[in-house]
Length: 226
Image (tube, helix red, strand yellow):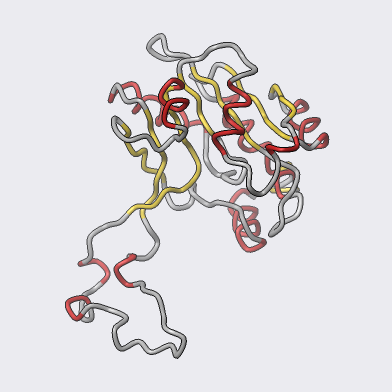
């Protein structure tokens, strides 16, 4: 709780994963990957309750072992096509009322309790309805484009960018998937964390923003956590 506002954190962790099988419970620096998000949530000064939502009994068992409450996710919400909104609403429909909901994806193991608390503090300072975490882009999107089938780069870059240095380009930011906070009534109304107004960015480092989706991501995260 902060400024009389209550916060529910939800960690969605379904059992299926095509790119990296069982990624949510893979051994990452000596702990199941989901541990790192549970631990960050438990150590937060402001989170009132943490719930892991999963269709997988092994994930639910591990979540309880590390101190999280759990909720069994229905099979229809554990498919590749199930939306984050439907998964979160299932949790919200089955718990007591809170003011804000926080999405902590287990694939962001380097996000810390300090990041969570600073994002919540920003939310309260701004009197915001939502805060979403971002990080500076590793490469400017201005230097990117699609390619035709023949790989011709004749029109790949606008002329005014060809001789520009990277440090002369405007800084761009991307969503990093680590922290989403939203006032629950707005989340339900708009069916999204990315609401239309009164939403602010919490900036994180690129290191803390690693999102584990592939084997390479996993190896990088493991190296940095050891």
